[in-house]
Image (tube, rainbow, N blue to C red; front, top):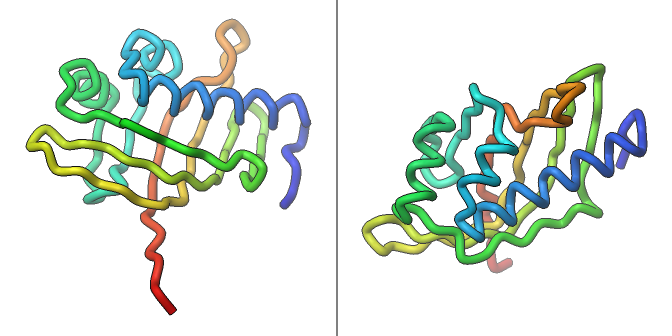
Length: 137
């Protein structure tokens, strides 16, 4: 796996990823608000819907969507930084509960795109998850 162009960027981006997942599990919308860019967009792993920052924060804040567990595997992550852009391609195992009480568990690969701000550090601009289908072979 190629390292980030700067090992400090790799560490900072993986730390930002960890804080994002921790904030989801803790339903910490204040922390999520700090981590996400104002124009953040999420593409849902469950159904491919496009979710803007405001909708994600509202869903987490209201408990409409909860994340009982998110396990990430930073040692497997591919991290790249190109100027003020950081990209993390990683893997998670996650559980979440929808507003209707249905649960969703999935292994996923994700791509997180970050932008750097000299004053505030990295902000997550976009997140895309793809479910990993496991088969019993």
